[in-house]
Image 1 (cartoon, helix red, strand yellow):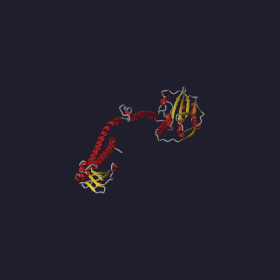
Image 2 (cartoon, one colour):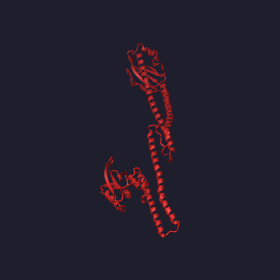
Image 3 (cartoon, helix red, strand yellow):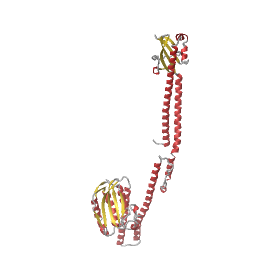
Image 4 (cartoon, one colour):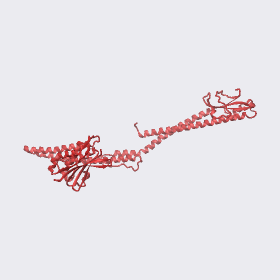
Length: 461
């Protein structure tokens, strides 16, 4: 259902109030009608007892013959009161029924009750009640029947129903007006949130919503929005820094390519010089290609729907594969490998090998000549179960404490190595962190006095 929230809530509130008022009105109406009918029945039985007492007094037989209207006067003299007296043989001794109404004859009893009263409808369509009893006149039994037509009661009930309908309508309209006013007041915090959201733009992501005057129901929303703004601000800041770093990283090889080519074209060169220029350009282009591939991998790794094909992998075999691949590079640096790992790890084979390759390449570049790079695997207990840790430790210059929080950021390199190895793009450790996030794990660094240990923590299967 679309449309205004105020309109929907107001209509719902009006409907609830109208139904509640209608239900209350119906209950009160039925209670009122029941009470009136009860009182009328009691009054009718009272009149019947008066006629019984009158017939039981001395001279009742003469009164029936000389003053028959006296018995209707006993019924308060109302024109809608009917009286019929019969002897034991059914002979009518008195019949006061000017309108000529035909009404049923209920069973007669010496002490009639409400249960013996019969309802009937007059010729004019008005409701009526009839009751019957017995009496003794000069020692002879007689039957007494009294009846009344309640035309005025029907009109009274109709007026009462109209009043109830009017009251329900007024209550519903008043409820609708109050609902609109209350919602207009209650939705002011939401309008304030909307106004604040309209002011949010890339340069103002650090502004926070004020939850001091907000109702309790909206405070979780405001807290969530503020947390979202913090994440957006952090992401925007990182993206801005990444864009600057990316421009810087691309500028260096592009400037090298442009400068070398312009110098070569400034004058006639020999074939050997052109060949040297092309070889240098190829190196710069390969570096750009590696950087682009790494950036594409990181961009895909950020997507939540990336699927990994995890399978049990023998840790010893994976370490042996990496050791054989980097054996030549290690010999050039004068370092050796030491690993005695066993067991298995649940991981994507290609992603695991890429992460290990990045760590080993980084360890070889920064290891002291003649040192040993240690590959190890351990299983540790955690709150979620047993975690598997793969570690790569190299001996060399310790990592500065200032650099530790940023080692896994894209394009971050410590100052001492920033102009270092030509093969480095500054994205290796960022790729390692992204791979571990795809596995639901994490990448850590544990510095020592003269060692650096990089850890891949795989969660429990």
